Length: 163
Image (cartoon, rainbow, N blue to C red; front, side, top):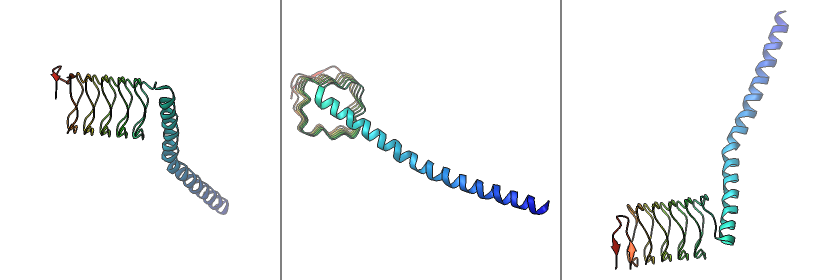
């Protein structure tokens, strides 16, 4: 009986070790699989946006949209955190409630864009054209607005800026 018990314990010990190793390797691959799925989903959302100019609520975080033609695009509530929108044409775009935290909007055309309640914290807006844009209740804390063009622009506090 002792020999049989010893063999049984050895069998279960080896089996448990094997299962632990397999599970460990599988769990290590889960974050990579999730990241890949997110990248593919984001890529399809970028394609959808470029084709239709309609992507409200889309997750475009970190997307490269440099030089994109997005005039009159609907990006209401979209996540564009850390997106590259340098030189993008966003004239008359709806970015109401969009998350543009840390986004690169250098030389972007945001003329007459709706940026109400948008998060522009730490965004780079150097030399951006913000003429006629509506920034009511937008968060511009830490945003770089050097040499941005303001004319008839509604600022976060509701005042109109002409500069």
